[in-house]
Image (cartoon, rainbow, N blue to C red; front, side, top):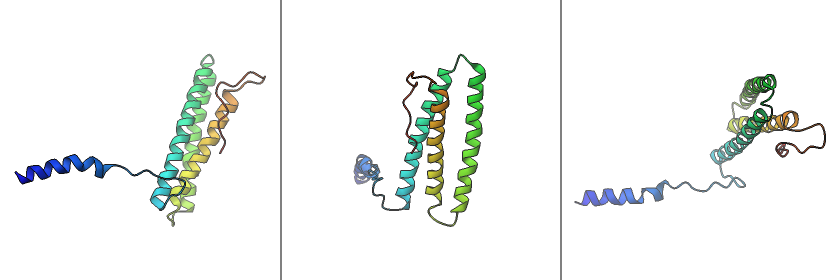
Length: 138
């Protein structure tokens, strides 16, 4: 009977042990936290890029040639971004900083790509407001 009581107590208290601590990206304490914060920034930048990319396709859907060109440019950009950030990782390969440097590279290029998509495919030449607000560059 005691082993069943123990099992119940373990199962009931497991969520308490499994709770993830809150990450303070303003004051990371170690390399793991620095990498987690950098990955979070990349995730946010990628979500923003996805939003602007999707909007650019929707906004230009009446021009299938342009849509195809935007999609191709995105594929080519992804190849470039991976190659560039892989080179950055290689530059720092002997240090614990290698992961954060590669993540920062991806984040910066992703933000730049988002801005490029906004500037070229979601704005107008006249004073018409853009389809989406200008994304931050940094």
